[in-house]
Amino acid sequence: MSVQEDKHIGIIFDLDGTLWDSSKQVVDSWNLALEQCPDINRKITVKDMHDNMGKILPDIGKALITGVSDERRAEILELCCMVENEYIEKVGGELFDGAEEMFITLSRKYSLFIVSNCQAGYIEAFLKYYKFSKYFRDIECPGNTGKLKGDNIKLIMKRNNISKAVYVGDTFGDYEAATDVAGIPFVHARYGYGTVEEAQYAADSIQEVIKVIDQMTEEEIV
Image 1 (cartoon, helix red, strand yellow):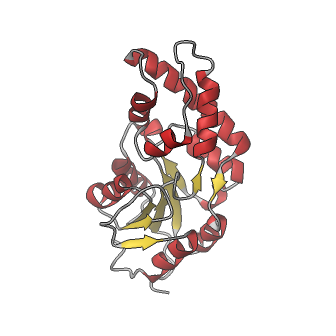
Image 2 (cartoon, rainbow, N blue to C red):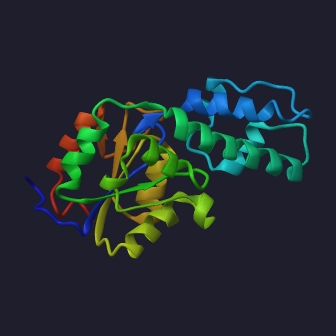
């Protein structure tokens, strides 16, 4: 084992495209919400959602909810998020194979966290559906703080007295948030949505995430 057990070292996960794929369920829930909006005449597709993964919620709203004022878009987006959280909590998503085994293995040595670009309540819905709260020390998102991902990574490290950390994510935005803003190593989940050619560390499966982190030395985890 390269790094001895140290709960002051954090493994921080992105959610969508890293731990699960909930795009179909999110699309279903948004379309249910849009049925309540007579001024919106469109159906959102899974491709629409995939094309916007990794963006902050207001930018997703601008891309998918068009032809209305900013104020009206914000109202519709709020409705979509409310319906989405309730729906996800009931039906879950497509959990990537081996995710719970990874949490069990890594939580023996490190503190685990989730930081995702999502609305308040979304990470909680994920944790509640799968009963995963026991594995995670803390979570954060812009829906709670109004901050972007990199700042939320720094916030969660400071709040939990984490001296070193690794961020695991699947998009170039995740890479920038971890390396450029938070100043911590990034492990690219290549099985997810995005391409990150600049990533020093990469994994093609959940099982490889464990191996990559296991092989990192204490000097590499800054």
